[in-house]
Length: 245
Image (cartoon, rainbow, N blue to C red; front, side):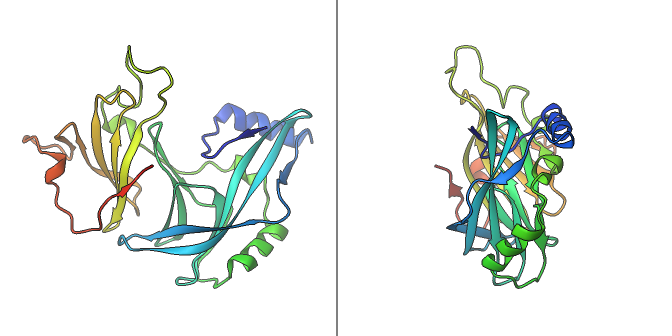
């Protein structure tokens, strides 16, 4: 059994699982009857955040009689906005104009926007009510059938940013997210590449899901500028960046 904390299903795997599901060769089941209680942070586009009670479970897909993998899922109910969301476990949960969205950070160069299996705006459901509705109405197989929107950061950075270089540690995988913050409708990511040769700060518009600004190795590359700038000179009155562990 494999655990997939962040989902990056390839098209070939999804097609394979679809075919198996059509022929009845695999099943999707929850791994636990009772959902586990947790607390998660929900971010506002303004940069404010609050802790909310959430519940977690996992869905197990049996691909063969002896092989399976689990996809962790989270139920989020914001008692302030009344918005609710159930989807794959993500790095960030953000309130947007279209409701809550889960965001998986781009360690491999692709930022994933999880729209969720079940989502409602201003429903005022408690997290327990949300779980009960999910239990009776959700189609678990949609976890592998729905392709979530992505923002590809790779074209905006050096071609080697998300890869190791000759001589670097073989066990280093993925870029390091040094810190992140949300302010003024944008997600700011401070990143370092696996070989620690390059650093970059990126700003992504939460509404449009597009890259609006990039500073790499002290030079602003998006929007284009003729004058190199230091990533430390960007002024912002928003809260201090949240450090990654």
